Amino acid sequence: MHTHRFVSPARKLRLAVMEASISMVATLLPAIEPVDYVTVTPSAKSPIGRTVLKPNIGRYTTGMWTKRYLREQLLMALAGRAGEELVFGSEELPSRN
Image 1: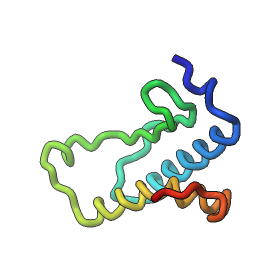
Image 2: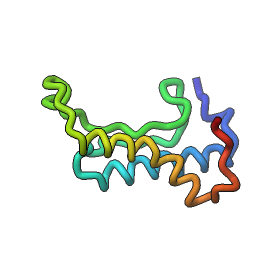
Image 3: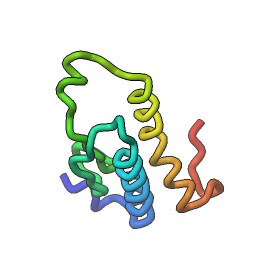
Image 4: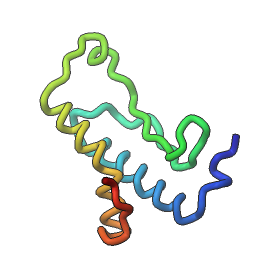
């Protein structure tokens, strides 16, 4: 299924900004795994694009999550919204109640 055909150019730009922001922040945060790949094209697997990190098998098998790692995970989760605000301005963001 080619979901990207039904996404407007404005929405594609917004998705690209969000994924670029997430991948940039992931790259800059030292506790986060390296970025494996990024896609900004919506698909059946991911309707909003994806930033995929290389898995750290040791971290997942031991369940050892440091406070720094968890804090950086939160920063990465908020990066897309922050990128939208920087590029489009806070007045142009959709309300998320």
